Length: 376
Image 1 (cartoon, rainbow, N blue to C red):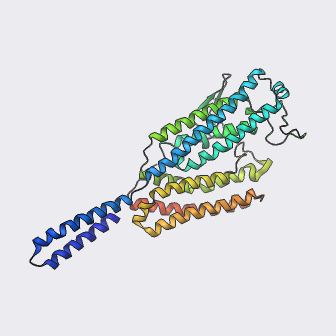
Image 2 (cartoon, rainbow, N blue to C red):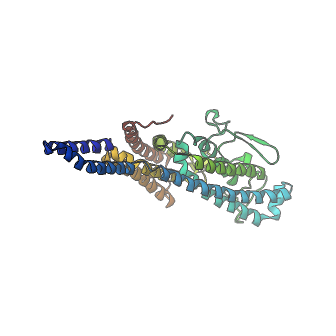
Image 3 (spheres, one colour):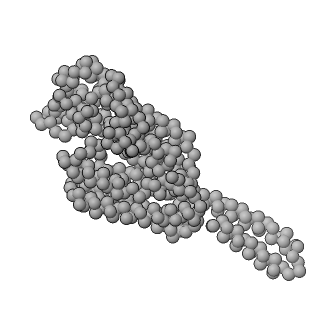
């Protein structure tokens, strides 16, 4: 539309020149021709400037996939250390804890710290990965998929074969499995017969539990493999305008889903929670990271939107920024110690969803004006 408008303007200017020329049309045409060519060149340059910055989206994604690959390799190193210690003790965890409490504690704490670095890296790219049909299975398997026993429809696609030969059939997404193993929130993945007092204060508190070494190694190995595969596929991925618009239309309006997860998590429900994941990092942090990635995605297509409607472009950009600031404000309050109630979480989630729905409507409208497909 933007290019077409400029071309019409050029045609009008040329036509006016012809009219002004009167009977000396042919010489004037020769004089006008260079001006037309220059104007056409300016149109081409302006059109080029109005193209989506798809390389910016891809480069952002590759920065995150590369960092995630490195983080999961580091996590794999800690997992291997723990597995070798357990193996040396013949998987007698009472003996392991009795003989190596300091070393075991250090390894688990290092593994947790690495996990807490890896998880946000994924969340920062989740908006792109989960919103792009060709990459979306990674989101199911690494971060969003359920265990088949809990939700057969939304289950992950894999089984985990453990070093001892045991097979965990579709046990849930890999970040969830590794988190619940490292923090001891799922009995099947945790050593039950040992009370591991990590800080030696005489109390066994939340998170003071020994992981099952076989489960931890099997899950972390697969997580590292998936991270490497995602990095490889991201390098091959050639994003399209349709990919970018689809990611935004699919992922922006998911606020209620994430706020519901936050409401049910340990951060609000405390010991009453039935969730075995989202215990180490607040879902508010995840939402903020996801929105950050979606802002990068929108920056890539902003020139296209501006070409259609500059006011709309500003509104969408400001809407995404305001939504992220809204989540950041709630998260800041939580970090400062505010304990939100389930009712407050519902109200905040509804507010975030309303904002997100409005933004999504604007983005979808522009996609329609540009005749850009929103993929199923």
